[in-house]
Length: 414
Image 1 (cartoon, helix red, strand yellow):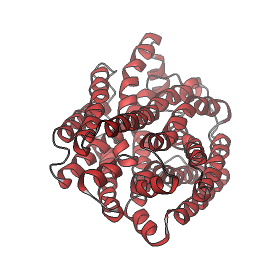
Image 2 (image 1 turned 180 degrees about the horizontal axis):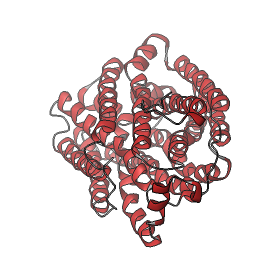
Image 3 (image 1 turned 60 degrees about the vertical axis):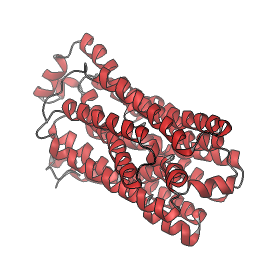
Image 4 (image 1 turned 180 degrees about the vertical axis):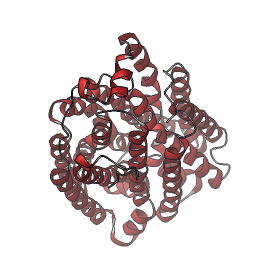
């Protein structure tokens, strides 16, 4: 029997581990869908709910703001109760909220329900991290996490052309109702297949792991964690153009209709999936830190290119957004690097803190973009100049994050 990365596992917990990983991975596919669907049907949502630009910013940011705020409490619950029950309870909230979005006509209730979907998705990736990394961070564990992350990116693909096609033919509300049903199935999968793994004291851990943990001084742990915090805040800011603002950008600047936007989002999702699937192979040759720094530098260049030429070519813009989006693929690398400097007994709390910054960055970016767009509209700024400003704002946290990350502890080559 093998784990999700295709690597053989020990026979003592093979069956539950495999099914648990697949249940959480399926849940992560849906989480990625809910992160991304707004960008494709943005104009339909704005029209049906009569959103102002600022209200649309609140709606698109509500998911990520609540998602971010939930990470530390979720991490504490994982440390105390394990992955299964907290994940199932919160996913139930997300299931109900997705159903509400599909039927309500009240814009304020829609914003609240969107936040509820964020609550439902909040424990999923954290659950994967805690489930796999609880007892170590060896090469197999890094490959399992990066492979599960890559599979999860297919949810963004579902929220691209399939979503645009279904919306054009059936409307977005039936699609959201179907998504709520899938969320319910995923919740049941977590309940039945995810088991709380036995916690082993450090003295019972493998000798190499125990030695590596003892070798980490408190000063190194405290000093290393701060270097990861800015990159966590910045790594997914560019993904805002895939999850929400890319749709309005392509519609306002290039006149893309819903099918064209769906095609563009499909290309972005395929690029993100391709980048994610490359990581398990690249970590065999380069350290997580080297890969992450290179990706951040590429993201900065993409943001500056878009800021300089926001209306030059839709092909160039989509390609640059693909590169900007792919920076988020370093998420599992940074989390596995963090695992090596977080005390085992506080893994949920430590990963929760860093993960909260990832989604806080997206939530803040989406809300700030809404404020900038509102002011620009009032001042009569052209569409191209408006989005040029947004891309400049995107580049700033990426630069700051890369500078801080430069000083992070060097991980071993996986």
